[in-house]
Amino acid sequence: MAAGAGHPAAPSAWLVNQEGAHEAAIAWLGSLGHVGASRCYLSGLTPRTACVLSSTSALAHLRLGVPLTGPGALQELVADARGRQLQLFYFTSGTYSETALAYAETFGIALFTYDRAGVLSHANAAALTALLAAPDVAPPPQAPKAARHGASDDAGPSLSAAQEPGLRAWALSAWQARQASAPGRAFLAFLPLGVSVLAGLLTLAIVRAWQTGAGPTLSVAFVIVAVMVFHALCVWGAWRVARWYGQVRQHRLHVMQACRPPMRARALVHGAMQQSGRGVPHDREALVLLRNEVIELSGVDAFTAGVLVWEVTIGAARSADRHEWVGAPPSEHPATH
Image (cartoon, rainbow, N blue to C red; front, side, top):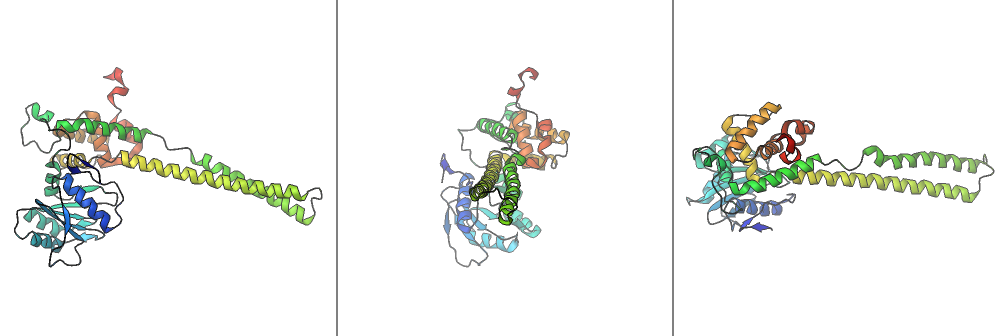
């Protein structure tokens, strides 16, 4: 598992079993500042608990395949802590009930949800605080731009200035991935298969005429060649279609990976939405307002903040509006800047 500055990186593999989820949770705890976590077994656990992860500073429970987590599962986590001063985490592939959220707020449990792609999302304020308070993998942070301009220390969640170049690079790669056109057109991929169908109809007529004697000039060799040509066209057409589907899948996977926001940056947008009370943007004006909130909290440039807000809230759902709403990198239009 890759690591940077002593902190394991979040996995990108699909989580399809308990072992994969277990390894992912160890990486998540490491990225949150609790390195050295390992799987342990505590007495009194019910079969509902998938596994327990423990480090010197944190204790976590992990579940996979449970659609709804209630307060009973969180009570198990508190009981396992046994009064020790540990930060408590809970990871689930499902969701949390209202009573579980209230219980977690009482005991300060950080609740997270994750999907099979390894994307981690916070489910309560304690989890958001843990994400934003996580140590930086980059060099020692400097004061955010908002703070350098006289903003107060309680202005809210922010990213360090050391993270800004990395976030800018991600925004550019995400923009380029969204701009890249899909490989080939569908009708061109299916054209050879259509030609093979027409050749099959012609070959069928030739074989039928040869069998019935309607075409006395047709030789056996000619019929054999016609059948072989038909089969070759079928194989070629099927290969072209399969190749096109493979290229489309690879393109979609590349776009999905390139446009996946960093974990802390995703938390930054959610924090800005919570502080400002804004929901998912429904027009360009709403996107600009939320983008400005992110700029004030993080100090990144407008383009990076715009791409980040777009990928976290809208994504590929309205790709036709992306260029009009977000714009393009300033370097692409030097005359306008």
